[in-house]
Image (cartoon, rainbow, N blue to C red):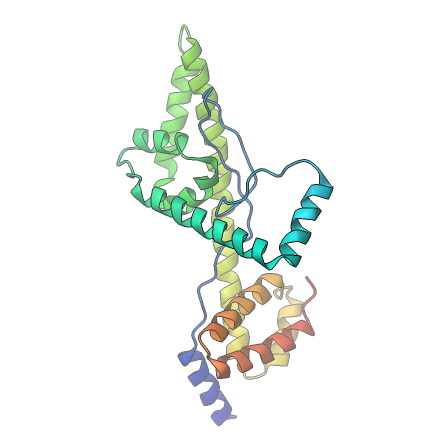
Amino acid sequence: MASSSSSLGAILQRFPLLAPRPTARRAPTSRRAVANKISCIGWDPEGILAAPQPGHIARLEFRRRLESDSDAREAFDRQVKEEQERRRKEREARVIPDTEAGLVEFFLDTDAREIEIEIGRLRPRLNKGFFDYIQREIATIKFAVTRTAEMEDRLIELEAMQKVIGEGVEAYDKLQNDLVTAKERLTKILQSRDRKTTLLEMVERNELNMSILTLLDENIASAKTSNQEEAVAFMEGVRSSMLKYITV
């Protein structure tokens, strides 16, 4: 048993767990439109896909074409990568303001597809002081003796942004906590000397779920890409064991 534990430790040292990636969570987004409005869209981390077009048949036809036409699939993948690269360069070229007032304008001028990315990138800046600043400006407009059309538009913008970013921060924080928990639980399984007992105990505490399996699959895929055959064999064995007990 000591030899097995030593071997397992060596494997874990050579092939450490990948950091989990937040890829499946949805969060609200916003953008400044021509009429100074903010609109919400669904979570699209890379923001590549346009708004869905009406017509279930058309969507199915497009999916079937991608599955059957390798040239169309390659062209679509190439277009996605080019769009990702273009937007990455544009994002990196933007200057992050130092002040809370500047940060408000920064988010109001951020494209809807970039909001969730900017929330993750600027999460430390989205603190109580930032939201207090927004609330003070909202209160100033609401309690003004007279309000112009521009002030009314500004109020709509600020209230929508306050809600969008508030919900986005809440979703981001929950996702980060969930991913940290999944990594801790997966590490516990990988390091266990009695995998079956560990899995049964986790099932009893309702700790075994698809998040852990997804994280394990990401690590397996990464190990395969790096030709780490020993790590792949070990983690696929763990995966097989997990599938016997996982329920949700």
